Length: 431
Image 1 (cartoon, rainbow, N blue to C red):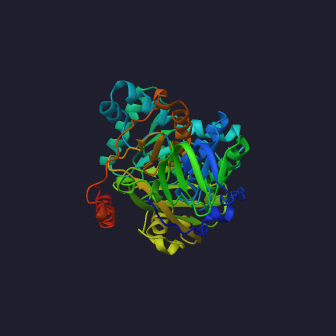
Image 2 (cartoon, rainbow, N blue to C red; image 1 turned 90 degrees about the horizontal axis):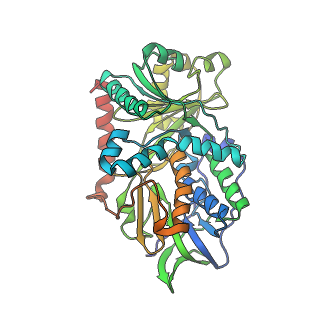
């Protein structure tokens, strides 16, 4: 399969303006033969390369733009524990053995990520201040309490906060209940992506930006990957392209739904206001039909995120509903300026689980983080590397499933807009 790519410049964002400098990741210009080729330079691909190199396996990352260009360098910066579905549901769906391993793995991913950051001394403003899953309607509060009960039953460091405790933790009286998981935290995602790339290079991996994979096929018992200027031959491959998955592997693009998620950021808040807004500096995401998420970063900027236009944006006016909502939460923001607005494309799956496939000999695919990719994709890098080195004998803490294209995939843009509108209406009505 042959596809056409046009490398794009880094899109404007707060992260682009404040991140550490990019690593040297020049386009690939000479043919290479390696043990593992990784297509996609986001968190999953970079972490896998780092862990492969750490085991002495020669790996190369091919990235169509630059490391962290996609959602990895443009997300909410939250390190959130767990998967989208509750622990009891996961265990009932996948059985006692795999289900429990999935739960233990997913809820520990922020701890794994923060430890990796410390070990490799990655400068990315990482903090472990906890994650709040908050409800502002009683119907959603019951769901939050149910999730918390399941976590507490499994011995996790989780606490349920009532309205009074939430007012102290957030500075707003919007919420009636929340689950606090102290393992969560936040970071500057583009700085983290660049630091992860630097750590992988230092460990021995090769990373090449502006090097799209234009075709992929088997040749002489290896995988052949064509790029604009050179050919890569690899014993094994990993495709980790998430929301930017194309037709490189037939049918793969139709297994996920690419969805834009948008963020607006304020100017640095004055100290007196900054002390009132999220004073514990926990990150928060709302439990509702349509998720809004936010945090106050290391420079005292408020970052508000949520579903936005299903097209690229570059200005906060494009997501005015987020800035208006922030003022509703904290009226003291009324005269604060909003300096940045941007978005990127996430990959959602029909069943809300991340997808792991082995569609061919020595071929591994990982995608569909469903908006939880910072910690999850980082920790998956270790598991993907283990599988690429050890093959089928290497245990992995996610189910390996066949590719299953979504029915009527061509209609996804209309469906996403309808779901977002429907969810916003239900949230406003308290349904």
